[in-house]
Length: 220
Image (cartoon, rainbow, N blue to C red):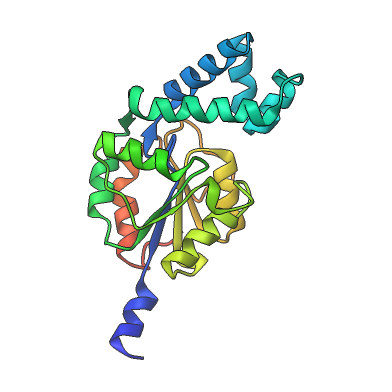
């Protein structure tokens, strides 16, 4: 085995969810849905509670069945795009340090949002961007399907078994597990079912994620 082959064999990769994992966007999501509900004359709190557990098109079907879902989605996208530049965003403690210290080409973002919004938010918060971003437009099946994480691994040239997924949400955790990857949960008081390790905050997870990326001795 050549030294180059040995190095590739030792390589480890980290795949991050964005909202709720690297960036606190809960208040932004609530504000966007509040603005959307107001435009349609709906109760904002009721709409937001539905939106928390369903995808947008499913949300529209439940809360605004008499409206064109595609028009509803266009309005939502307009409001989300506006929020990228007008909303207040904050990266979780430890996010900048972690992303700066990971080896170049060893990590990616896997998000149910769209790449242009992620880039805008990262620009505003000063977080570094990776070469690989798998967004909602890149796949036909979103989380909890394993497809987004498998797509990210393929673009990195990584085997699923060499990848660590860092997530905060049950759908993302299921996606990582179905992809055959190591999955760690962050930013929750209690662990999401199925995670291999759980950290109450991203800050707490930072040294462990860096250790995973450094070599195979820190697997599950």
